[in-house]
Length: 251
Image (cartoon, rainbow, N blue to C red; front, side):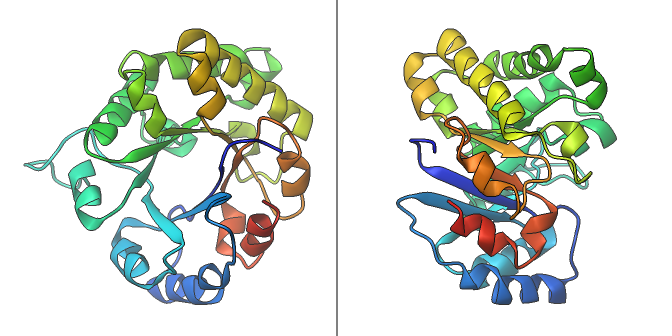
């Protein structure tokens, strides 16, 4: 079990009608019972549902956006600026998710620039990194995740890293039902923590939370939580179900 304050995020992705979101909040998230001194719980609805969720979810559950832009207010049709999010009262945004990288061509540098801009505008970032199946089979996992981290390092001061939670999400395990074994996940989390210690600072290595994503669910969460360097989860499909309660209870 990790020594840092645990973090469990529910990434609802592009799911739910408003009625479904209302039902999820009422019957799952508002029934969660957890110690906020021990664990942070964050849910991430689609943009248009955020105001309703903010007003209706229990106060112990924080709300995050799933993305934010590289630009502020202005003539940027279709964009949601970090300033919009902080103005609503949000404290979190997910950046660098593999679906953003894959489907919307967000490069490591774009993710790094977005991270810097979000933090400058009073948001904390759930920074997603991870490798594809081909990269893992080629033995390039650590090269990929350190390259993704180095891009962010080029943009952030050391002090800014206190506003980052790193989410290791092996792409081959996202939405596939496959999950990295606890040992596989821990190996990468250790490597990430070692990178933080070497390239940033030993203090940040001790305090930075590194969470696991990639088909985390109520069946595997206890075994994953037993690993020393796994500080929580970014949960996809299971965050839309009553089973999310079991994941929170496992913390």
